[in-house]
Every structure is written in structure tokens, then in C-alpha cells.
Length: 302
Length: 294
Image 1 (cartoon, one colour):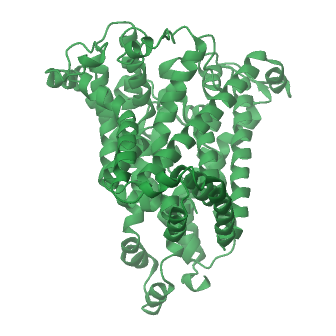
Image 2: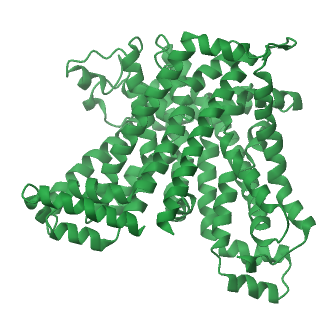
Image 3: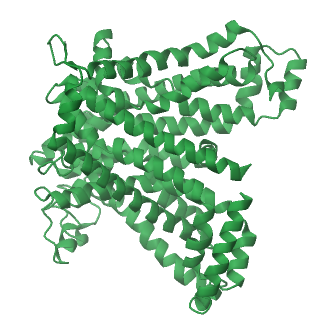
């Protein structure tokens, strides 16, 4: 770190020499009210660009036909209730959303549980070869779904799991990232607390429930949000392995609408209603738990 | 370190590790091994596999369609990485510099982290639709004929923009954290000495943020190669004339439209090598920079 800082200082020294006159006015402008005039409009414009597509989506989901060919057409309509009702009831989004929710909750709970187990063994047990096991788990970072979905498809078929909830949950349960984040966090719990627990003769189950979990609340919430967003947004694997519409998840539900709307058999306002529904759960969780989420991300990078 | 190791029952440790190890073995390692094995066979649906040695790999090496898919993926990744890094860096800097409303700006910029790629794709399909799109009118008034259902380069750009849009949130999260770690003293000296704002970003902040930026370049590259399937599938289906046929989509089609499991397994192995190389680079860089951190 110190070396980086020195390097930065050197660069900045040379920057100062070449830059002295040109930027003087702007630099002094960073103090006081001038700041506002430069940065806020830029942020409004850029943040506006990032929000704009979703703003359009929400507006169109309230309109009758979804034909919006110019900016002045972007006024909210009065068909919100009909559109959302039709998406949920007639086009199966009630069912799709339920399947997605079930899948995501099973993945989050399962992954969290077995990852806490694994991280606890790696940090708190004095047993041989545990570093090898940790490497074995970490190495799975090299094996994401895209690398193995073809043989996985064959394996799931051989097990007779295709088209089932098992197929879209169990293969996701092992998580190198989660074990890694939890291990890092466990290593930051003060040893004094751990030693006290040992002196008190606390057993492993009690230690996990009464010491480890309460000391890790924020991280557990953070990884849960990361895992939920990841699970909810899965598209490729459910598309391949789930055949019947009744068992399908909401991401692929959107794909089913796409064909109809391109063929002109369906109103865009309905597709946009489906999109809003599909976006809401992960977005709500992220906004609600943004603090623990951001804290957990800083652990991940280490 | 060792004071944390308060338990020593091997049986308990085994039980705690067993679920993660078992799932990894059955659903991660085994299918990968199967991909390596199948890549040496001629194999399709309801057909007994026959051993063909390196034939599948040779066919990839000599296939001009596969070469163009590789080229498109590399170009796509390069554009997405540069686009995401520069736009996120500038946005993070503005949010870092702003005096009020930081929390609101941050949320309005990082929310696409939660955005499902399928939703992002459909929204882009709608707002850039050649006949129905909201932005089609404004864009065509600039003298550009919007015809990306038939125009390869335009389709490439639309998929790229959608992919960049979705990834900005994740990048800003990490960049803001890195910028907040920069000592205030450095910023103050720079300001007092009259270094302009943009110059401060490029000459002072970016060098200090190098470890974070390297990490994000690797993550974004992996994202561009593998997590953009939904964009291609929903926006272009790889077309027009394969202009957006990136490797992951090409692999999907080989396996589930043409049912060539042998060739598609060889393609899986190629993707495995891509991930492995990227991860190795990241690991090396992290090692290198941990010396500075120590």
C-alpha cells in the first residue's frame, strides 16, 4: 500500500507541474457552491440514463397497447390493474414467480447452511488435510454452469430429475464464494471470544448457534442477498432442464412471452408488466439490505 | 490462528464438510470430467458414442464459423469491459465528489446489480425496437437508420449496450469502496496544489485503485463471456448472420439445437480453459498486490 501511495504521489507531482495553470479555476471550484453546478447536473443526466429504461418499462406496463413511439407518449396509462392481472393469471406469471421464489429460497437456505458448516470446519477444527479440502472447494470457481451444462444435462436426465425442483436447486448448493466469504469473516472474529467459549466447554452445535451465527448476522444477510439475486436471475439452466410450463421459472417465462410479442400476438404492455414483476423481488431485497450487502462485497474482494 | 482451532473431532469435521464436498464432487467435478471424456467421442441423442480421438478439436480448429465466434466473443468482451470500466469509474468519481444526496445517487446507479439479464434484454428489445421503439425516433432523427434486426454491427452494439447497462451497478459498488479508502490527505493536497478534478481521478486515484480495477477487469471479462447468454438469446438469437453468436450461445446451439454432444463437449473444454486462464491471471495479480498490502 505504501508503495502504491508513493507511486501515486510521484504521478500527482508531475501532474501538478504540467497542469498548474490549466485546471486552476476548476480546482478552486471544488470548494463552496461551484461544486454543485458542475457535478449535480452530470449525475442527474447519467443516473437518469441508467434509470430511464426501467422508467419506460413501468410506464408501458400501465398502458393499454404498449405502443410508445415517441417521448411524449410516455404518460402513464390506466390499464395497470388489467395488465398485471392478465400477466399473473392468464400468462402464468403467478405460477412462474412462485417457482422462482421456491427455487431461490431453497438455494439460499441450503447453500447458507452447508457453507456455514464447511467454513466452521475449516476455521475451528484442528484436523489434517483441511487445507486440501478448502482448495478442493475453491477450485470449483473454475467450473461455472456454462462450462458444464451439457454433461450436467445428461447427468440430471440419468438421475431422472429433469423438469423438477431438484434439478434447478441441488446443483447450486455448493458454493466456493460463500465458503470463502464466511471463512474470511470467521477469521476476523476475535480469538478472545473463541477462547472464552472453549473455556466454558461449549460444544460445536452450541458454538455455531450461540456464538458464530450471532457474530455473523450482517455477513449472513449480505451473502443471502447475493445468493438470492444470483439464483433468481438464473436463465440458461432452467431454460434447458425445465420442459413443462407449469414448472418453469419467471426468467424463462419472459422468454415464452417474447416469441408472441415479436409475432404481434401480444401487447408489449403485458411483456413489460411481466418484466416489472420479475425485477421486483431481487431489487426490493437489494435496496432493503443494501448496507450488509455492501459490507459483504468488501470481504469478497480480499 | 491456531487458537481458533478449538475442536478436534475428525468425525464432526467430516460431517460438516461432507455436504459441500459431495455436491461439488457430483454436480461440479464429475460433469466437468464427463465433458473432457465426451469431447473425444462422436456422440448425439440416442446414439452409441464412438471414440474419435482429437477429431472434435480438429474440427473446431478448422471451422471458420467457430473462429468467427471466437473473434466475436473477444471483441464483445473487450468492448463490454472497456465500456463498463470507464463509465463506472466516471460515475463512481462523481458520486465520490458530490456534496449532497450521495446515498440517492448511489442507489440510482448500483441498482442494476439486481437486474435480471432477461428483463434487461426485453427492455432493450422494446426501447430500441426498429418500428416501435421509444428511442428509435430520436436516434433516426440523428440520421442513423435503425435496422438492427437485419444489420449485424447494429445488433452487436445493442447487445453490448444492454450488457454494459446491467454490469455498471456491480462495478460502482467496488469502485466507490476503493475510492472511499483513499486517504483524505492525498485529496486535500492535490486540491490545494491546484490539480484539476479530472486529472486527480486519472493521475492520483486510478493508480491507487489498480488492484480493484484489475479484479473488475477479470470479473467483467468472465461476465461478458458467460453471463450474457440471456441478452443474445432474447435480443438476437446469435444473428443476424451470426454477428452476435458469442461462444456461450454457440455452445448452447451446438448441444441443444444440433445435439452434437461430442463437439459441444469440446467447446465446453475450450470455455473451461478460458475461465482457468482468467482466474489464474486474477490469482497472480492478487498475489502480486498482496505484497503492497502487507
